[in-house]
Length: 517
Ligand code: ME8
Image (cartoon, rainbow, N blue to C red; front, top):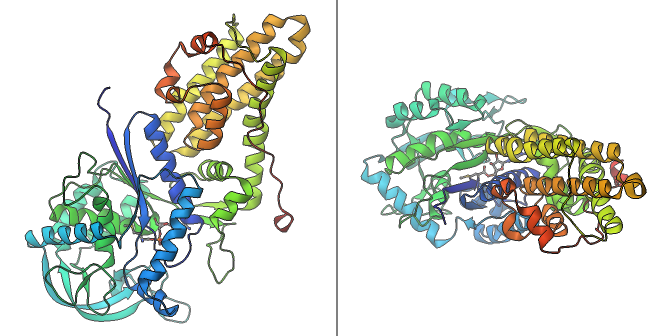
């Protein structure tokens, strides 16, 4: 087999200080769509997600609940993993930063930064936001409604004074600017200017250890110090590959997928740590937008927090995945509501794609005894197949490669609509008596189109696409994007004697539950 290109994709690791919310589900699903897309495109994919368990935020939440941070992390991390499994997220490793190999990796990168002369002991005096686990310069703070000081993210800050290790972030200003300006490193481009402006204001050295609590990775050779949680958190991307041992060919990461609120950590701090440790920087960081509930941020106080598993149970995992990738222009903020999910799932999945499969396969089962045979096509058939092939082989893959999921799905959906229009125009049910040969040609043209449509959409709706490909008799090994270019598959399928069974509907029509109507 030919050498395959490695593709290493990661999500942010979530704080397990509570249960997962829809934003976590959104990021995990998007990363999974990318991982599946890259696998189908023939790349050797490694996909990592997990939980970020150290730091003051976790320590305080545990204290509030009268339990240990490790107990809190154990329980909540389990829910995050459960969420990923329930949403069909195909991670290779679910990392927990409390795991021993992660402590080892974090201490190793610390020592590498120390060896570069980039760590020194001093006293930190300044503002800290526990919610963001972030230090802020006084000049960045904004005023809250009651006159209190808030971080630029609107979270409370507290004045902090403690002895701490510092990282010479200032030393990397020039290299970071160059990196941030290099095309493709940080996307979408709109996030780039903000980061460039931040570096251009001048970087201060970063406090990278804490002494006022001990829930973290111990600083090697410095009793009483634990690492600043972001130092260890970011290192998770290396831990999963075996750092400090041989990481194989997966590093640098192809893509860190994160939300827009943590771009600074991933495109300034992280590359600087890596440069200091003499490791290559990631190829790309993508900061996706935020998902809002009917246009509003979810919060406990508003009482509008949605359990993503409940949504998945109510509407189906694939309908939820499809909705999120279809609805939101990736990179921008998006909004969801039960009505919007139901509307799209019914119009696009149930009535358009599902119905196309249902009509076609039941007519083949009924009117052709499920048997496929070679057929003569006409210009109109070839045109439809050409349009479908173009959407499935060219447009969707090109858009997915560029992380433009909604436009890729739109191209696919146009092909679905074209198929439905073709069924209506060709009216195969009427041809049954008048021209059975032509009826067979029409139904099999649709069969061929369905196979392309099902292969292409696999990353977004993996279970439903697999169910359809099963119904179409497409062998497991012939479902990659490369297989789309195979011109002989239909002949082989006919020769194999495969018969189409009466189909079961793929996408049930969803009802809007009364409480949301
Ligand atoms: O930031 N919509 O963890 P986290 C979309 N532990 N994405 C959202 C979102 C929303 N409403 N809310 C949060 C952390 N996110 C750190 C990361 S990485 C080394 C450490 C995204 O649990 C958020 O942007 O607060 C982030 O990418 C991820 O969910 C985890 O957020």
